[in-house]
Length: 168
Image 1 (cartoon, rainbow, N blue to C red):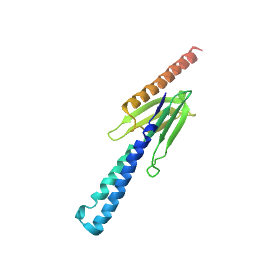
Image 2: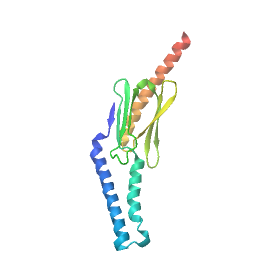
Image 3: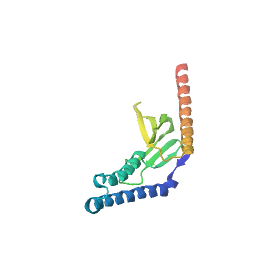
């Protein structure tokens, strides 16, 4: 199954550009307010606070582009950012399906995150994190369905292997 919201790149780009323009206009208005107009008085900081809060909100929402591919023998996850200025490290992971142990979707007030638990070579568990704020409800439902299917298959194979080793 393939899942991607890359087709909404133009929309995300527009939102980020709009917030950037609001930020620049806020800085210009703040400079003019302090040096020339003095309309707000001591409350001129509001002209900087509103655009900064918008940038903070976009930063907390995380990386907007999410791609998932479960076709074949591997799971591919990719989570990219649009702006290099706000870019957290872009996540690009590929691993065999049998290494997926479980997953967890955290739906907090401001953000949604996907945590994927993967077994590593030395039987350690690695936790991979992806931002899924910008996925629609249907896309999240499809992602859950696909990951549940892989986890269920892995659990069935694990129980078969345990039964075979005990019987020998």
